[in-house]
Length: 234
Image 1 (tube, helix red, strand yellow):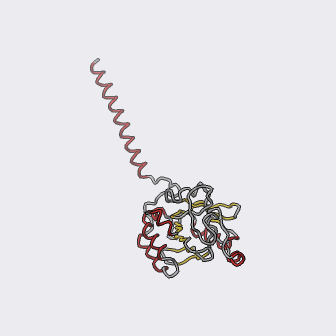
Image 2: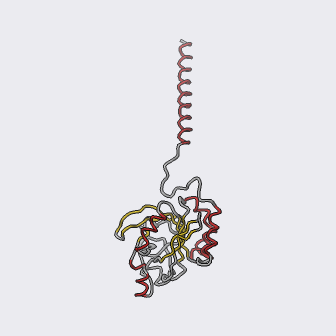
Image 3: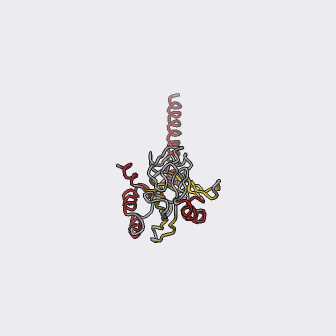
């Protein structure tokens, strides 16, 4: 009877040890498998750090304050990027200026320079107020990641994912998207003296919308600047 008791105890410990070994093997292999990335999840290898210095070549046409603001904070957001292409928007400039630039940081090439509208409650020709609050109809500043492309009431459109807490992280809930709009054209400026305004979306001329979305879709960084952004960082 005693022998049988020891045999049962050894069998119990063997099964317990076997389960531990199996579990360990499963966990090891599971750790080695690449997880499916969610939209906006950081990549293991972001863009090379030295590429950001390409922006310095554009200091003659892009505000040095914008470039410096981007360079001061890019490291926190560049790991999210899945593209060498970045877009800079300068809302310190009036809407009558071409204040959007799309740049390939790898080649240093300027891909696009065009008009972009701000939110109707941010200001008239110049944007002065910014908000992360739903239904504010104001623009939000900071770093974004391009996301889903879809066909909406404005045609080809692209959703944006705000990357900065309390600054633009409500962008998804607010349905802040890039879309084309007739009120974001030079023709509109000639007629009304400024661009029209959106509900907070960075609306661009319809004739460049398809090209822009095709260039920056699926994980490209967009940085929207205004001096008030610096105050939010203080």
